Image (cartoon, rainbow, N blue to C red; front, side, top):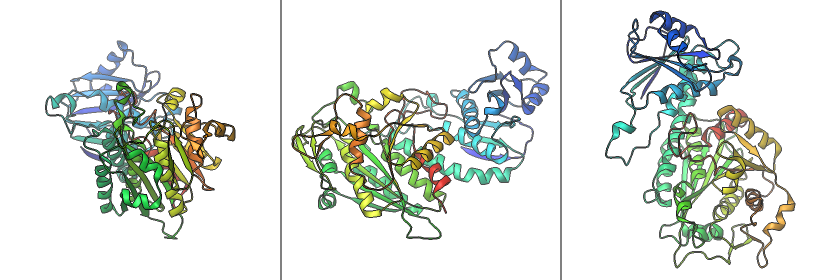
Length: 499
């Protein structure tokens, strides 16, 4: 899809997109379009339910008086509430409206409403980002009826008074968009294709962007004492992997402690010998959404040459039932030296993270460590598909994550950690057990992880409710895999940790 920023001019072909705020009140470009087509937009408004609310689209086909094949008026909502997230959603709504059409070109002429928070080049860049994110499709395995699933759009034009400023603002947005696509691709891949070894191979290709990428196999992990992670993968014929990605971008001090991201990468989760029901097993190819987000984040930092030192660690395993598989009642020894009684082999992600978290801290001594994991079904019950669960030992890091989530439309909600929950993890024969019972499932999982964090500022993001979706519930996400977390972590770094 070709994307360009140009000064406003006549739309001579394709789709012309303008905007209205609540009322509805047409903004200047929409007023001009209405005048050009002899009031067709005004007449359409009188017989429609379009009020200018966010997400609404008014369509006028083949309007007389203009060369555009159709006019779309997108709703921006209340002017004072319009921001870059609103710009992205408006562009995405227009792109979504064209699904199934033969349109190949679209031009956006969206005026900044008076009192709005998005203007100029920044507005233009985020219109482009919304259009780009909505254009994603995962059709790698389709062989028939491609016309039904593939967009015909080839050219997207954003009209702006300052094309140069827009192009400058677009560069980091483009890095984010491409990295979100990578994360979505990884989550959408079928598990017979994306094994731990294949995931590691794809991560290693990012070395061409300037990332240093290491892959540790099972023998190396055994020497490090990663019994928790290795126990999860021992029932699979496919070898477990630990991938380490490093970005050295700090300008003033190359040896400065890095920021660290750790991702759960269970490439398929059958539940192991604690086998999931068949319906619950469907979709478990996405149980590596945390690892996908970490890889996407590290790619973004490299592409936009972020002025920060960063490390990403992902534990890649497959949790399968087999004669060699981990059993309920097994005890494993983690890299930290702590022992875990495994009472449920389907509570496996926390075992993977236990060793990956410890490794990241011991080797790199980071400023902070954030882990992302599709960890518990309980978080979906608590927060649904709108917020990720946030658990942390550090108020400042939590506040920064919360603010970054609001800025990019990937919200988090902080839940409690407290020593009172520790009693739920007491084991009769080991240092701890890997499940805490029926109550507070997301909290006890986070409480478990906290035992593998020393004094490092730490945050755990339980993304089980936001890493994938069963239908197009969210305006910027047209696929099952969401790529959630890439934008959040990149914004956190950009706002607070570059220098």
